[in-house]
Length: 219
Length: 227
View 1: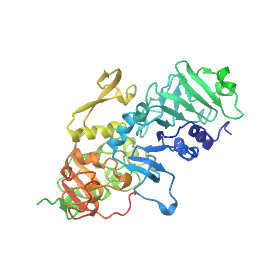
View 2: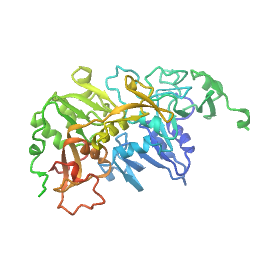
View 3: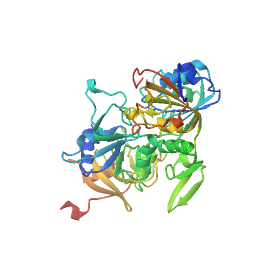
View 4: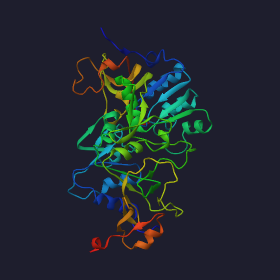
């Protein structure tokens, strides 16, 4: 049984921090859940690599448009105000710094902001990058949403990534099932904790120094 | 009179030579010209290099062409896909197909550059990763970038929603994706269109690929976007 937030609660915790008006790309898998948890009253425009802005929720089974998918190749809907464009424009948005935020999943994040999220081995049967390397360097800020440890308990927050990098020095913030952690010049900085989780638990599952929440922020 | 409409898929893919570099639109199966791929299988060209975002899923389309041993080399960003082990993965594991893995934005830009007459460009994408190893690096305005070369094709296979006899194209929803880029970047661009319209009936403001980029159009009625 994993500690702290369940998967949907992790996504909801990250969604809380997305302000009204941002343009956001969500990585495939866990980050995609964030779209369902944007607090009411905020307009956040979701971008997908395959040329869509203004992605809405999944369609009802009888309302599927086979020509409308997201980057995870799931059927989606388009919100009023949404638009379609080709891949070069889509990656101009990404690489040109026009997205306020990208949230990716990851295998590992190092305390210098390095991210490894595309392959665990260069001998992979099918190493797959997709848009991750472009998103990691192109969005105004990169957050990571991932479980704090692997299934067998190995830390994913590390001093140095052992897997091939997606990009060096780019991660600003990490949301895990245990905590929210910023990547700062001084290393991993705890921002807040999931209910029922304490500092020692998080530090014990983090393979790098973890700075506690500053005293003034606790009050 | 300009008339790029051909009457059959066989006529559309006629002349594609062995060893061709084929630019293939689509993201997954959405917007992928599966009718033309079936025609290419029938036509017999081999030793092909396929440039596409993905390396085929399921049994049809690109997966079928790979399975028939006709593709020597795949250039793509995301060769994984679907459930289970794909035909591409089986071939790659067996050493029967080469893979050049390219970040998706770099792939798009390399194709766009080819279409726009730009021989190469610098991008910060992939700096500090294995993908950048061996490539020329340069610091530009304080940011390190790698040199990436244009990626032109001999042939582009494009799926459009509507076309006219000049080769003007309109796409449907997210099926646009790589198609307009592929259309610009090949010596010969072949289109499968779900609808062929009278010249002058497509709204000029809606035309995403002007006919100047297109050589042949064949009508292939839509069955479904995803295989």
